[in-house]
Image (cartoon, rainbow, N blue to C red; front, side, top):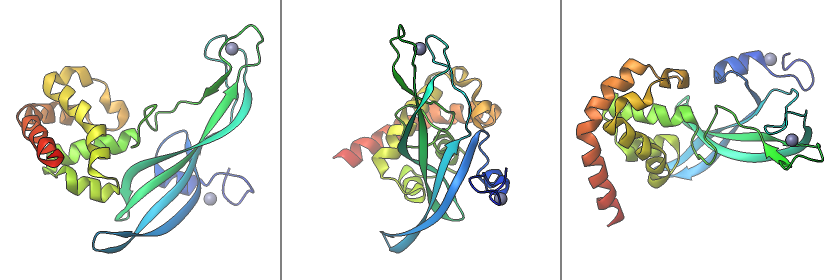
Length: 203
Ligand SMILES: [Zn+2]
Ligand SMILES: [Zn+2]
């Protein structure tokens, strides 16, 4: 399929977005005010491809139950923050004896209640570990407030500091495991400082 076909996905834009199974259906730039003047934000409408879905409990093929819009912050692109407008698919199990009812699609794109995509969280963590970027600077680049970013990364920083082995398999998420293990050793020292900065910000 290609954007030349009505309703088709664009292989070139999907390649640029680079998240298998997720398609970009619209691209827009939105001007907004920011510290230091106006900035542009790249707004991408995304969705998973169509296909049959089985009920997670009984396995019966479920009926489509419309969409729910979910907004997520992704990795900055072309020097601008990126907002995803994810049209999350919803399904309804029609098996009368099944108690599941309506359920929502899950994707590797983001955790269930996350405000950042999974790859944006790991991008921020790698910037802190490798480039010693500050949480405030990364929040600015991502176009989210400080607390939104901190809430997303602090549980993972704590896990890395406690036990690097617990994050084995993160290569699947797009981060080289060797780098994560190496950073975990640095975080063991740094997390205390980061926690101190929370107290400073809250006061
Ligand atoms: Zn195309
Ligand atoms: Zn069911």
